[in-house]
Image (cartoon, rainbow, N blue to C red; front, side, top):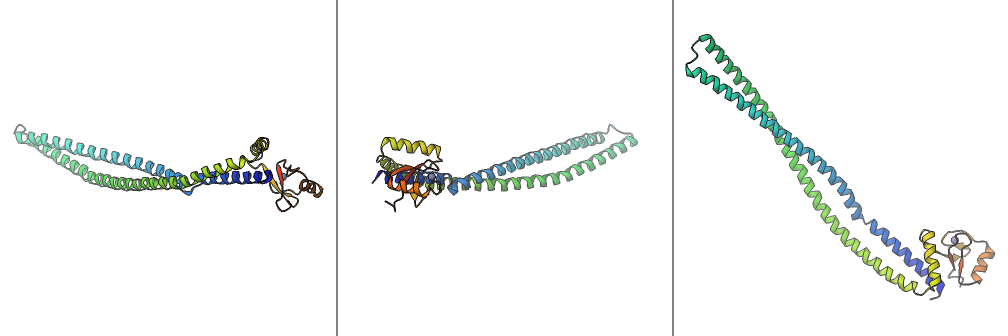
Length: 240
Ligand SMILES: [Zn+2]
């Protein structure tokens, strides 16, 4: 392999490595995992709200229970007064009876409202169960996607290792000086250090080189420099 060919082969390997590395970044499963995680954070927020709703509903039901109980205690106390025989005044007895009736109505109203509260609490629990099921499903999907990503990413990583080995072999065909120049150009020229002269076009910058210069490059040493982009320029394979 001539040095010009080795140079072009090296550029080819580097391009393949860059592509594989980009592919690794863009494995669909990786994107899918990121999207899914965003969705899972949203569902987790819904779950937090559903839990808060359930706690609030429970608290309301409990408060309603306590209220009904405390009314019952009052009813019991008033009734005990009536039964004790201590109150003999008919007017007073009538007042007590009225009070007991009013307390019973109040208790009924509280208990009636409590049924509504309990229904809401149940709805909240059902909603929470749905959200928890969606989350569990999402976590499972995430686990599967991560496994798929590892499998696909693993293939790409193996491929990258293989490409880098080939690259090292090809790089060994270049003189250290040329290799150093190649590397420094790669850094300053967006990863592409070498062009091929095809006709009068530099394949790297795709600019036509004046005919007499192109002819001089074809006739001169196998490795020149593009007068436009200043990359290494290898005379086209067809013309050699
Ligand atoms: Zn060029």
